[in-house]
Amino acid sequence: FECVIDKVKFTKGCGVKGKTTPFSSKNKIVGKLSWKVDWPAKWKAIGITIEGAGKDHMSAGGSHDVAKQVCERVIGYPVPYPIAYEWLLIGGRKMSSSRGVGVSASEMLDILPPELIRFLMVRIKVNSQINFDPAEKDTIPVLFDEYQKAANAYFSKSDKDLARIFELSQIGNKIKKPPSVRFSVLSQWVQMPNMDGEIKKEGLEEWAKYARVWVERFAPEDQKFSVQKETPKEIQNLSKAQRDILHQISKELDKKWEAEDFQTKIYDLGKNLGLNGKDTFVAIYISLIGKDHGPKAAWLILSLDKEFVKKRFSDVAKA
Image 1 (cartoon, rainbow, N blue to C red):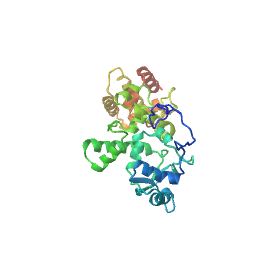
Image 2 (tube, rainbow, N blue to C red; image 1 turned 90 degrees about the horizontal axis):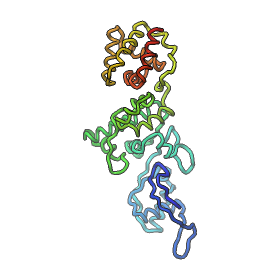
Image 3 (cartoon, rainbow, N blue to C red; image 1 turned 90 degrees about the vertical axis):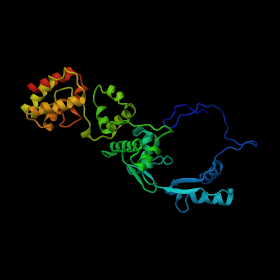
Image 4 (spheres, rainbow, N blue to C red; image 1 turned 180 degrees about the vertical axis):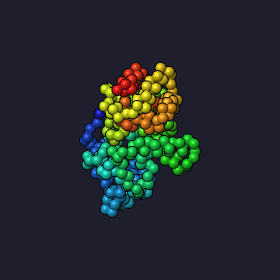
């Protein structure tokens, strides 16, 4: 056998190699006890004093009742204090590795970081059922937001209970401060070209992996976008003022801009042409992504090749 290093995501592995046999001898007993006997045997071998289990194990006549009798009548060990907890449902289906149905832990790790899976569970009372449906529109973005809120409570010492939930969600002894950029914003960034530098600068490489999975597998269509290679046909609905704003923006592109400042500049340019904020940004979105909504316009524009944007806006303005 070999305990392979980094074979799976949920544990490191130690690299130990060796040989063993499934057969007992006079000097060594090997094998595996049946579940209902194995459980109490481990309690005594390890010295367990408290044990949680799903409500099915804790029900009358269930595994815990049998294990309790084995403890009291066979091995003479005090029964650990029992805690019955509810099930974690994924989209209404129970997680079950033994039956091969529902969603596995490894699949959960594909869509959420380990600390957010812990956060999902420890923030809820153990006797309350959790129904986590990643396909629901805002389930994952809201979970990331709530995790960041808990982190803020921990580092600012503003909410003791929420801070404790964040602390219990951590993997290992080191408390890691999460990124400050919201997951909903990050999910827009990963859809823009040339944003890898900004993602790295903000320390978002790890979360970006999960944002891409969310966009690919769970995001609703109104939150997905891509820069159109050809000028979208929807530009025919733009007003003269909306075409003029694109021309004005093009003249600003040779300057060096920070995204926040450029966003304000775009708004001001539109205002000078008598456009409200919505109509200003709709002109940009329709011209670039063929939709009437999208990410913050300045970030989108600055993520693209300057000459591409100039040509596209010029084509739209003249159309």
